[in-house]
Each structure stands twice: as C-alpha cells, then as structure tokens.
Length: 144
Image 1 (spheres, rainbow, N blue to C red):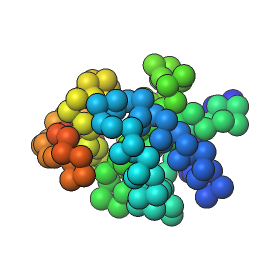
Image 2 (cartoon, rainbow, N blue to C red):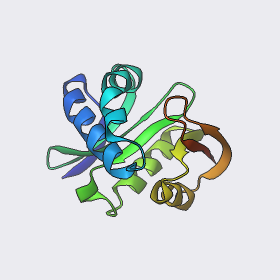
Image 3 (cartoon, rainbow, N blue to C red):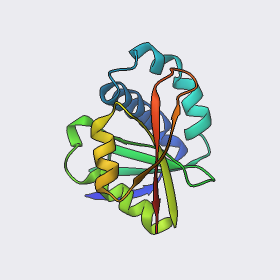
C-alpha cells in the first residue's frame, strides 16, 4: 500500500537517515562530510516542527519533501532504490494541489534534479551561490 501523509515526529530519525543517504547520492560533487556536519542543522531548520510530507510504501518511508512558510520546497528526497518510479512526481503533484506557488533551489551541477524540475513544470527564476559550500544553485519556480 502506498500513501502520502504529513510527517510525524516519530518518523524524524527515518526521514533524516533518508535525507543523508539521498543527499550524498545525488550531490556527489559536494564532499560527503559537508552533509554529515550539517545533519543537526538540517534537522532543526527543515524537519523538526516543519511542514513535511512522507511517501510510504508498505510501512516504509521511501521519500519525503517539505515546504517552508514562504512556499519554498526544502528538497525532494527519494530513496535511490525507488527513483524513476513516479514517486517524486507524485509528491510534486501533491504539493501543487496544496499550494498556488512553489519554488525550490537546485544545485546547477545536479542535472538529474534540474531535468526533473523542468519536466514537472518548474522554470529557472534565478541563481545564487550556496552560502556554505559555494556551489551555484538555481531557484526553480512553479506557479498555478
């Protein structure tokens, strides 16, 4: 059985484990220890008490996403074993049904994520440098 639901506090450890694994996998151009040293920062800023949604298959969280108060998607994280199965698209479509406008920062070197965002209706709206690692990121925008 598959479903999308609001993340519960009891799912924090599982979500953070998924975040770390997928982030390292998808952003190999950033040193792995960068992500490990930012684990607690991400947990406090984007997970604890925030608007996050999990995608569950047979009781296992295989993907999650979150949205800030200003409609910024904090990321879309799909377990590598479950990628290319429509799960990311299902989460984006769910968010589109909940919000009139969404934006998401994506590393310029993460071509797979950029292609996915474009396929799901996002356009490049700007560029910036990540304040901690100096990588160029595009701000992708979707409007209803």
